[in-house]
Length: 273
Ligand code: HPA
Figure 1 (tube, protein in one colour):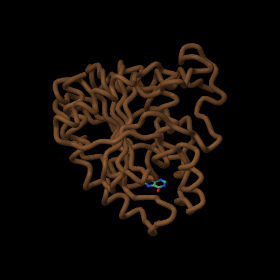
Figure 2 (figure 1 turned 90 degrees about the horizontal axis):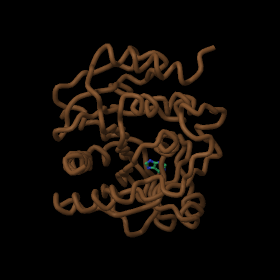
Figure 3 (figure 1 turned 120 degrees about the vertical axis):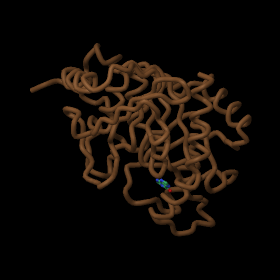
């Protein structure tokens, strides 16, 4: 059976046959936030089905395609969407794109998501820069992976999100007239949303945001030695004493409405990096 390292190299070889560009920035686009992919110039689109060992999306969308090209004068690799644990993918499949980005040459990862906001200061559609995270699931994408070539067995997690890049993102957003806040993101598996008691609990242990992604990818990105910027879009307010029912269509709609702000921030940030 092939090990993960060999699989990564086979996938990277297949990508290299399609493009010789070496991306320095990797971008993962979250739910409803995929439009930035259309702004990549000189692009090569690599369909997930053409990448060996890549999970292929069961959903009819562009999800899972990898685009390599130019954005704000830098070479970037963009994952148009991502794979989620609630869809039945393994954590190794979900985080495989991060391993690929690293091998392609990426040094900095920009990762976006749609999230519920538990901090009473947040507004719907607001952009929050992730300062830290809580893995509430009990699952870890590094379980069973013991290969020095992929990074440390016990990666340090004292500072997964790059403080300098958070500050730069804040400054850049302010210049662009985009309001941002900071927050701690908590990962749940989904797909059910949370009860009032759960939101209350999650907020009480220090989380400002809750969502069904990002943390497994960030754990692997830390192991891979990437610098990370996490950007959440608050798609629904999860204040237990004033909780309104929410559905996925509304979450996607709010993310799509906030999308242009996040796109503008990412483009301006890349220029400054
Ligand atoms: N909970 C979990 N995931 C989410 C939410 C939420 O309230 N909103 C967007 N993604």
